[in-house]
Image 1: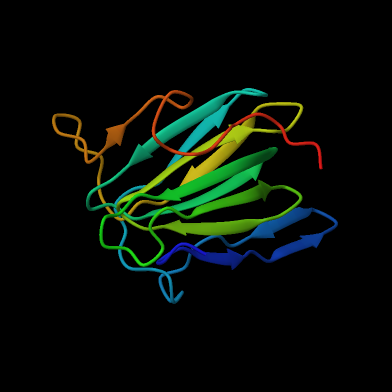
Image 2 (image 1 turned 45 degrees about the horizontal axis):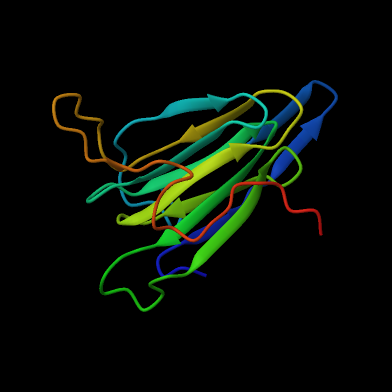
Length: 151
């Protein structure tokens, strides 16, 4: 596992009315601080990658559909530099993934319908000067192929 990445298994509480799932609590070990909460979606087969932050820590969860979340540790001084982590997250695997600052990340919708992902970053998005670096999802230095792998 990439240094600083934490995966929290989420508990779903169903009853005859529906279900409840807590995602992130202020008393969780992985909680540091709150910046904002937002959702991002992708249509089937769409890749949204790669980006990283200098300061921000993300807490990423897929709440509808399924997503393949991929992390790459490109941090110069990290003991896990060069490592990749791949997570299949969503309705069939409800987890929250803590993505440390400096780690490249992105996701691909792998469900038959649009996936909806929730992020709780530690920082506010600054429109004039975003804490974000982006590179092309396919043409880059990261050794990862977003194509489906039939195992």
